[in-house]
Length: 244
Image 1 (tube, rainbow, N blue to C red):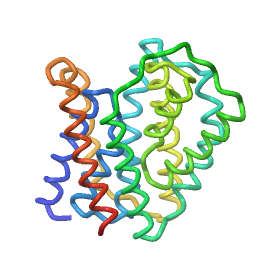
Image 2 (image 1 turned 90 degrees about the vertical axis):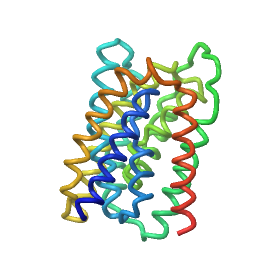
Image 3 (image 1 turned 180 degrees about the horizontal axis):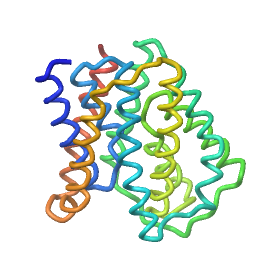
């Protein structure tokens, strides 16, 4: 990768991490969108996105745990099967055209989530053990396969099924992303025996952008405008992946 290309990628990751963190998101779909727009290879996108997920999810897990929003009873049934399935998903490498189609669909789905308004909260009902186990396993496999971490699927599932309130759902999703990203990355490295070293530079950019965004962004920027901008980025990147 040329220095100019790396500089553009680093700047993009910084901006995305800043914007996502300012509206309470980790940013996996945004990182994938930036790398896709810069035409990085799928073999590079997957481990890089998982590495960034590990960093951002670690920060989010710590913050939500300190604030008292994390629920172990809600978390572990979703995680117990998700971790081994995330490893399997990380180990597998889809053909390039199938990987792009799947990622494109996920980015379009993520864009739609930013455009939808949140429904009023209701008193949650805990999921059954089997509902959590099967949902967690399926999401874990998809997270490892695509490098998304799974939070973009688990959070809306918890809210749509009324299994958790917003903050506990975000807290559980943060640790869910962390454990699945670690498992997915280990699976990917086991399969490819390679790791993109430039991802370490991106980790620093994501950490800086995430720290600034989480502290200042939500206070000084309009969250509705940010979500619409992120939705536009995801729409462009998702369409590009599907059509190319």
